[in-house]
Image (cartoon, rainbow, N blue to C red):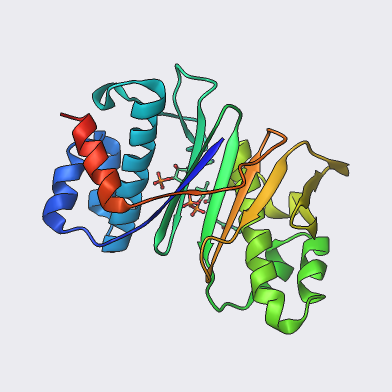
Length: 232
Ligand SMILES: CC(C)(COP(=O)(O)OP(=O)(O)OC[C@H]1O[C@@H](n2cnc3c(N)ncnc32)[C@H](O)[C@@H]1OP(=O)(O)O)[C@@H](O)C(=O)NCCC(=O)NCCS
């Protein structure tokens, strides 16, 4: 398993257009439709990141990479069932996890929100209680940890929000001991939380027993140069 992170930098409209030429038309259209430039950059960098990883790992030329999507939108490579990946972006970060079994990753920028109210309405009762039983100053962090863990589980399963948020519960004892319970039984999924930067929460959910200890950080400009190089 490898986990990659790119901290995004601004990209000129001209370069955005140029780089978009190297990806498939559906993604290109999605990027074009975004009004917010950061949304464009995050989505483009996510695409460049996974394409660069595929070119390096699977030795496929970028122009032959074709993503399929399951009915809930999770992208995958049809001809490489043991190459699993998942992308997440938020704030200044784009992350991608790659593994030989299904994987889910979620990054969230921590924002000051009414976490008690949201947890009460959307999380399972035990998760809500876990959050509100914390010292007030830690509640927002614990809330975002549960949020990213839940999201990483949903993304690992690949079924989006067709899995109701209250239908499963994340149990956190210590960072090294995070489990998910659904239908009154523990699932086999493994979880890990990462501190990538103050103000961000990252969670990874895997069907493997071990999760990488480190995140590989890539510089955006180096990534773009490598990507352009692999397309020559
Ligand atoms: C689409 C969803 C999978 C993730 O959405 P998100 O958290 O807004 O977005 P992220 O940045 O983490 O992930 C987006 C990436 O996940 C991937 N993805 C899309 N559908 C997916 C699915 N069904 N399963 C797994 N991954 C998926 C794509 O690569 C996508 O990248 P792209 O937008 O550049 O194409 C889905 O779970 C969702 O809509 N969640 C809503 C968030 C929410 O309400 N969470 C409640 C708190 S627990």
